[in-house]
Length: 414
Image (cartoon, rainbow, N blue to C red):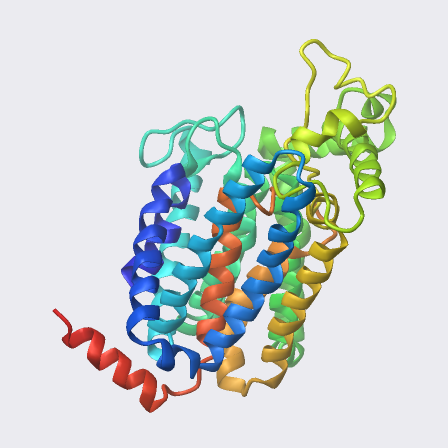
């Protein structure tokens, strides 16, 4: 349990998160060697393996035409740690109470993230004495990192549902308001969109309750959706700067040349040329940067700089997958999401309640109408595969006799 939780605890601290992942991967190997039959008998385990295969095999199939075979091979091999650690996660959490305990731990951790970032917003330094990163809240992620907003924007459903299950409604609304404020102040527009997706999905999940108390719900929604963003715009410089920049990018001429949006427009042109030239299996997982100089649009001002600026990825999920693993990769993603959605559709209400926080978080992480971190990068992959593994684990019905026997044997082993 603590190893699984540690994947979120250590997420702000860079490569340290690899320690629990590798420990779980080793445990996954041991489980496969000792209890393969019990694992195969678990329906959630089969779902996880199929989802992993749907997203990993396109990476393998991108190898023959990879522009950087060494880089793609490293990514393909490194992703196996998520498969093996996922085996451990699904096995370890295949009991409802385990899922409840994990949600409680994650909810407490995310509440600490929000409090820590709130202290940084109010005092200029967080609880560890860290200052904001280039004018934006960074919290535990530290100076030089802008991942607080994008990460918290995806993971907030774990906090909201944890609070909803244990506290009064006013505590939930206060928690939602505080977490939204932190995501706004972190200044990542991708985080804003993710939090919005989470909010819509969370409202849909609680639609019956909201309709019964529509007056109070409407008032609270106005505060969170209208009053809070307006107040943040007026009082938080980083929010005002990002909103003003977004408006100027959409309306001003400089967006085409020097703004982040203008940069991404040139990236998109190059990515589309890359897809047109490599439609089946792409240029190789994580090969975008290596292939971009060949496919950059004529007149790209960023490539023309000295030294040239080559993007690491396309900043958009479907474009990145289509360019790096081709239509095979897009089909694999669609298959994986279909498998996950099918299991949610078939699940009984108690199971749907268990998977809800992780399902909403996955929707926020993988919604196509947003900018994204690189799907095959270490940080974003950690989040996505952790969520998928826990989601699959929460699909489990009461443990089978085979699983109980495997647990007993594992605990008795020296």
